[in-house]
Image (cartoon, rainbow, N blue to C red; front, side, top):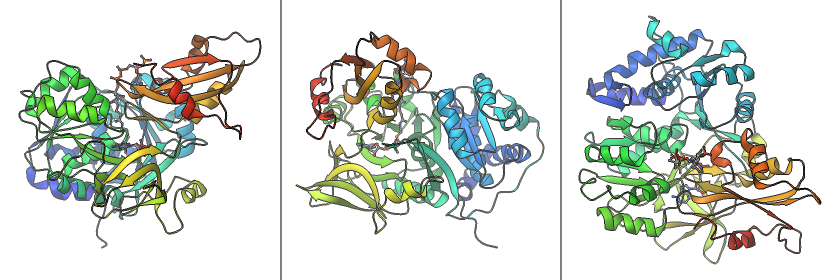
Length: 496
Ligand code: MCA
Ligand code: AMP
């Protein structure tokens, strides 16, 4: 019998000995480590009954809950491919993900049942609410059948996470069981997790950061997780004294620093604050150290590769740098000029490709097999990396990616719009604020609100331009290309 290389099997082997230790401490309920396998076996049975098999996709758009975590683990147990979606996605966005991933089962929030029924066959739709409600959870509670753990190879796909491209529609990054396992194995050692750690979890669970980095490290080391529904400063300040690790995006740290109740005393039990998903300003790093005595540990990653680099745990955590390639990850600068180049990486963490898009996959790799991150970086003599720019046209707002091309295409479709440029400019809370600069057709009198209303049902709220400007023309270079750098300079102060 071949060895089971599934991530679930690895977790199971590690959590077996902790028995009744508290795993998830969530708003509506708690689960012990000993609850995981019996419950996941039931969830797996419900999914099997709904026609889910190994390698079937399970499309999930649910509010954050402990049961949603168990649903994810049950997909790993079954060998089904977990496809999580941002809860903010609109019907038209979800319809695309449905068509592209061709799921055998959709699990959605009860409030979104009608929306999913309009997209999928009713038989394929089940609901899971955040308060142990929904027909999916009802079935889990009443079923008395359990199913064996599926036999899985490290190369099998565990999850597909959608990431937008600079051109065209979103691409589903396929992450294998081995991709995920190699990453958590390295991170839990590098960041020196111990069984006594308590993770304060405030991130969404539809991204690599909250789902894989945070939850996997906790499961791997059998930690208790204080599980918040979302990031809320007051709740974080209340629970930090009983936590030891917090992972966040820079916006979370900026918001904590804005709260006077957040003090050194609040952090006295804390061992580690981690930041990633977007650049952490040196100013935030410094203010945080002054306020708390803690140096935030910044790391860098991508949906396609999980975590790639990290500042050291024991050595120098240097503001404005993302540290060193993780053990096992090779990194180099492509097309280097003046000490800067696009970071290219290779390692066991790098994804298997984009779901059913072999050409797009090939475009993102060099001929010798390095993945091209699109992040312009510099590397010092010791190999320490700084992300200094982006070769890709991407905005990161509050840790969420917004691709200007997607928004520009939708704006340009609006009757009366001639052309548009969408840029990210400094925003005190979100890091970058999505901003649209629009030229109208002659004699058209649309206003900014008309544009916002047109976009409302088409894109999630976090992608909506925070400010819109109607102008008479866009700056272009001699080749006719819109000069976004000039626009970014011109609008640099609008959120200050
Ligand atoms: C919410 N809004 C946003 C954002 N979030 N607008 C821009 N950018 C955002 N990130 C909108 C809301 O829809 C709302 O719009 C308005 O802003 C105010 O919402 P607010 O209550 O302030 O927002 P919030 O609920 O407090 O959320 C902000 C947040 C959240 C806490 C920063 O966005 C968040 O948790 N971000 C983390 C994302 C993350 O996990 N990223 C990791 C992916 P309206 O008023 O119009 O309704 S990257 C990754 O995984 C890679 C691999 C990595 O390296 O980690
Ligand atoms: P995503 O597609 O959501 O996985 O976002 C990945 C992108 O986030 C990377 O390509 C970087 O541009 C950015 N990113 C993640 N972590 C950091 C960081 N610590 N500093 C700067 N950019 C980061």
